[in-house]
Image (cartoon, rainbow, N blue to C red; front, side, top):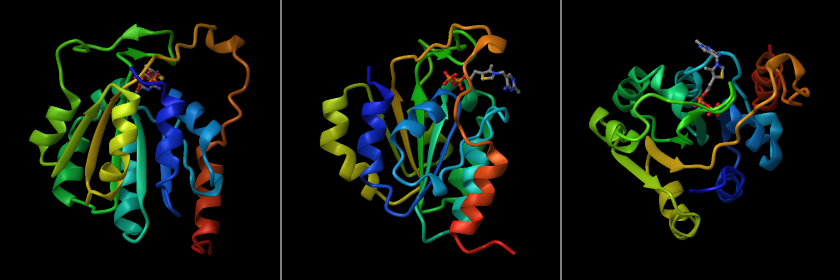
Length: 195
Ligand SMILES: Cc1ncc(C[n+]2csc(CCOP(=O)(O)OP(=O)(O)O)c2C)c(N)n1
């Protein structure tokens, strides 16, 4: 299994001036690692919608890399997005799913099918031209250039260590994440799109 921060540090080296859409515990990890927060849009409550949102961004900004850090439970809620992304086939889209096997944000309940399904297999069968699976950091490190230089849409399933949040929701420290609305405003400013 791979620590998500270790993975993200490697990916950040390849983001260029790209836009990153993390979700769930991936948002917390990416917030520690990101080298350009004006181009990050962490998605919180809209469970499952990071891939759909990022698809729209990728189609609107075809010259920028768009990187998703999806949750496994989240992707299960929106499996249809695999089909839509594969059909639209944005060359600039890199879709990571952090497969930790649980709903970490809500206390670590196992996701359905965690020991049986293959996200990388589903993405491939949905029509992604390139699909990877990694559960070893050294292997990922040795292939990250190949992954990030492949033409999109690229799907990358990464078996990660769960960062389970055990405190009850009301007792948690503030996440320090930008609200999504603010992140979208900052992104538009940074891209020169503000009207
Ligand atoms: C439609 C919907 N149902 C349930 C929730 C409550 N909820 C918030 S986070 C979460 C778990 C997310 O799991 P996963 O995508 O695997 O990410 P992880 O927490 O493991 O990083 C759930 C069930 C929600 N936000 N939206």
